[in-house]
Image 1 (spheres, rainbow, N blue to C red):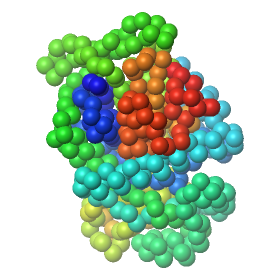
Image 2: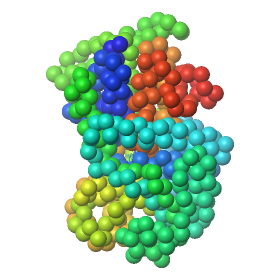
Image 3: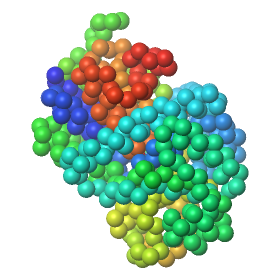
Image 4: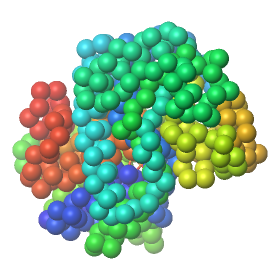
Length: 430
Ligand SMILES: Cc1cc2nc3c(=O)[nH]c(=O)nc-3n(C[C@H](O)[C@H](O)[C@H](O)COP(=O)(O)OP(=O)(O)OC[C@H]3O[C@@H](n4cnc5c(N)ncnc54)[C@H](O)[C@@H]3O)c2cc1C
């Protein structure tokens, strides 16, 4: 079958890889000059199955209210005259009940664990190098109330099969001696040995190279402008995708099937087709510093719960990422936010890095209110979704690629997940 994949982030590239491995003829359309140049460029690097709790949870509404208008808040909702933003916000509130949170955690853990295992297989079979570290993720807390409320979440994760173990402050320092200077502030932590970290950009570009060697065509510098459709109800199909190519020419490309993997931009493409995706961009920041003192730098991936920052060691670089602004599609760097990240990183690891020339970056997380992505079918028989991976696209990405390739090939994916358009109790056909 001839399949066109729209978008070459971690999600589109993984999709293209598995479709190719299953014998399909694949073309990827991407507006950037290469793969992984938007949200999959400089994220936090964590493959964190064990911290699948979505932002929408029972404690979120109060926190979001408290943080309103605070420039360096971990999660900042900036109200705009934007209908989609308000509808997204209301849906987010609906996802904050304990029942919905538990349901969403189960979905995310299922696809994330499947993805972690799939990533291990792809790493072994392709040999792609991406500064991966398989030493677990250590999440530390500086607020007793937050630590106490993490204990039931850790229990739930263990019930779901994630070996997330709650540990004392002394054990935190034993696991990561670079945090010794913070001993007085740390109240406890949890550690998951099976979680990992690595550079999503190196992985995605490595996979795109391998896929191209296997025959996938990557058409870069090409803007997707519209999907064309025909028929209605059960006969509806997508007949082509309208693009503007690198030379500025309009064209329509045809295929047997189309997969939308355009991250935060998927929603606008699909709206004219009557497919109401609830995806809103969640702007996040990262800072990358060169490590200049091995002894002072962390050697495992960390999450600083108080500041909602993740820290990953990517070879001789330290990547620190976090914060979220619900404020439209701008990727502008806000100095207050950048400086807050560097201030906190210096506090944690004063001698680890050269802090004089940080590389700051922003990316738009394709957030669904529940943080559960859309993977599966639509009401158009040959149009498929793989998008909306929010805060965990690196964690869920490779498995999502395999799952959608299975669905397109007519095979039920191995993972028990609420795929769109497939008989499962919780998702409706879009
Ligand atoms: C600060 C930050 C930290 C994060 N940390 C982590 C982490 O530690 N672990 C984790 O699991 N996840 C993390 N994430 C989330 C993760 O990075 C995303 O979920 C993931 O990158 C989304 O991948 P994607 O392929 O869906 O989107 P993208 O990478 O954005 O890919 C979509 C592609 O579609 C292309 N595109 C869009 N519109 C068009 C068009 N009209 N025509 C042609 N091409 C188009 C874009 O150019 C882009 O390449 C983080 C995100 C941020 C912002």
